[in-house]
Image (cartoon, rainbow over all chains, first blue to last red; front, side, top):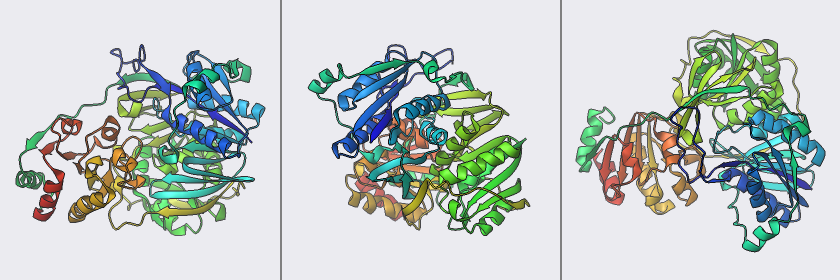
Length: 249
Length: 310
């Protein structure tokens, strides 16, 4: 079966985001950008399914600026077969992303779409579930294990109290959690090879999707800072402080 | 204005996250509740007693037994289309699973992880792992939100007298089924609602030492046990212990961080705790920048002493 893997270009997870002085957003000028870490896990899982012979082709998709091509090339270097860039400089919200992906899914007819559970910039955690709703497919969110068995896939989900396993009819949506796998690094020969893999260029209009945002960001500010407190020198002093605070009797 | 709250329950009991969601919803209008499950009569009655809930819609039947999003989301979307202005779910794994599916069925953009309600269409939410706080205004006619439990007080579980109405309609979408669950059984309080949390980091060194040093202190204090992502990744603690942006967001009365350096992603999950205590051998550890009380030293000496003397 074919797998669809959407990937997002986001601020690198090692970079501390800085709020712009004018409060309009986070400063992304000259900041290192990378593939969203949860999406890397999705790419890795797709490659493993292909290596097991479950999947036949992996199509990576990114919706974003021209530079999102780099993110797609990373997916191709890891092992995706071809890529689609839906190019736009506008902010595209999860709902519109899901609509574009739904249109692509209708064209490509994948057996599964694997997505990161959330992007580390807007932290929405919505796109996979929305895509599932728009396609009328089953969803296995926050996956820590994915096992395809013929017409269905068993997804073990990280839930608040532990783990839960659901069986989904294919085609289905899977969103990845951290412990699903450890993504591989692309080797140099594969990075070179990725340069010649096909990458199609599209726009949201090609899929008839209106990307006008539904949410307006009124302001972005730094979180309120916590003041550092005092240091105590001994366990006894710590217990005294806890008593004073009424924590222990 | 009417806000429909998704009721979370387990073993016939309401979950605390629902009570916080009710408080958030009550800032938006009249509160209705949706209970979906199988044999959930008692849960519906409990939901009707929550202070502020005026109506409880009950979808009772086999398709809802495990609150599968594929079966529950259409019910919620139907009720919201029919007579509600908002759909509110807690930012739990259940809420996060169901709410975006409801939003897409309604063709609206969800507002995730709401920390504050500023007005009928204006909400405050964290982005970039809590490194920035955004105020957003929704232009959708109906609004879908998930709300951060720690940001809203729990509504009183008693005092309401909502009417109970069975939901007619709905069916099994035939897309998914429940296979099984491994839910950790614990005598300790739940992380997200505990008054005190004792949390361990990578400095514990092994799963054995994690339990040997953290558990007795937690039991002495009647506390829940948490862990940093580093400790979870190293296999010292199970993932459902994880506190942080990628784990659980907590805000207890007291948070005791032991051998936790205080990575940004961990701080994002616990910095709203009322009192933070940090025990760490590295006095430069970032955890001390947010701790109210810090103790620099060897946790393997300090923690047993603390446990004994408390």
